[in-house]
Structure formats: C-alpha cells, structure tokens
Length: 125
Image (cartoon, rainbow, N blue to C red; front, top):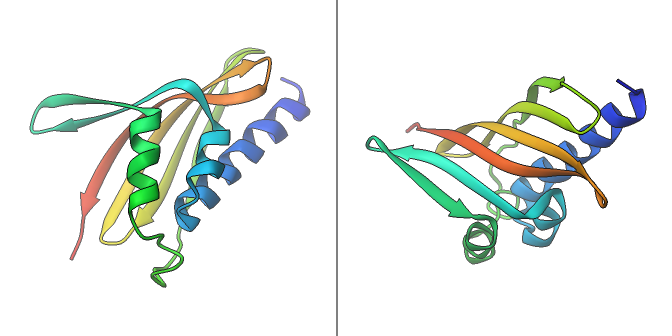
C-alpha cells in the first residue's frame, strides 16, 4: 500500500490519541466518521454507543491532561488490507482506566476516518 496512506492513517491515530489525552471532543470528532459507533462489553452485553453520544461524555469530563494524569499511549498494530480499509490496535489510558482499542478505518471522500471502535477497559487501583 502507498506510504502516503499509512502516513495519513497514522496522522488520524495521533489526532485520536491527542484528543483523548486533551479531552478535545472536536479533535476526536475530526478523527471519526459521523456514522461511527463505539462498542464494548458490559457484563456479557454488547454496548453500542453512537459517536456523538460519546463526544458529549468527553465534553462533560475533565481531560486527563488538565488533571495531570500520565500519558502512555501506543499504536500496537496497524494493518491496511486494501486501498480503502485498515485496522489499528492501540493502547491508551485515562487512569485508573486502561484501554485497548480496535479502530476500523475507511478511506472516505474526507480522507481516512475511524468508522468503528471496539474497546476493552481495565480498571486498576
């Protein structure tokens, strides 16, 4: 795949991780397609969260950066399976919550966008 696609996907990933740490919902919105949903498991039940609902939650909480929380995020895996699809696995944190995110990308008219996020949360004391 073209190096320009990988660079563009990595730029979206950096925007996403910066937005999480800064608590910047507008920055996060720019990384996600408007139709995106976030999925997780809660006691064996799949939770389906529309992007805009999640962004409101982000707007309503303090940012990890403003709270002085450590930043430790990493791109663990990036796989581009074709000219319009990619998958990334990232690790990030908002202590005491630590996340593993699987981010599905599509190349849209607006460029690469996250269209789905499936995540797992560990809570550590």
